[in-house]
Image (tube, rainbow, N blue to C red):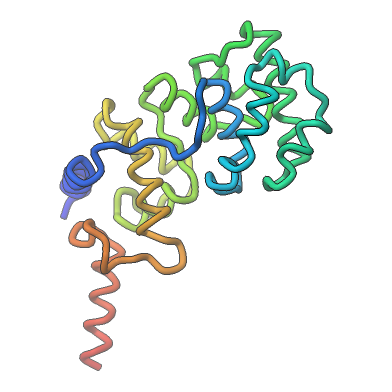
Length: 221
């Protein structure tokens, strides 16, 4: 199977079986999503969604959060991973948004990456989800699933994975494909024990094919 054939098969399967694929983070505005994605670094979306209602109730806009004390933000997000650092990021980001962007979240990835606590992955999420740009955020799920299925080969960095995925996935599908891979990794292609027997992509999956060959060889011995 060529790489192009694998991509076509994987895309066709997701389009049929997961026509709607969206972020599981709860938000009502671009600013709230930006805050939620910053908080989600090395933390589950479920945990973030437990914390953000109280946070957004007090600080629903960049203008309000820009005037907050870091200690006050910390108290609201203390159950999140790295709460002290993230509290500082949130206040710093809000202040930068107010000072440089009129309180609005910028569209361009390069501008987003100037904000405290916002790296390429976070910027790609915002650009993709809010502004429907063809950017591919590569988290641990995307990195793992792309490599296992065979969408990437010996990709050693998130950037290498990102560049390969956006090369082969049609531009108009990239925002949705980001969520396809995340959700598949979160619920089916688990890190420690992938649910291959439940996976509709097994016939297209390089990892599954290798496991089957290994099992066949073992049974013959």
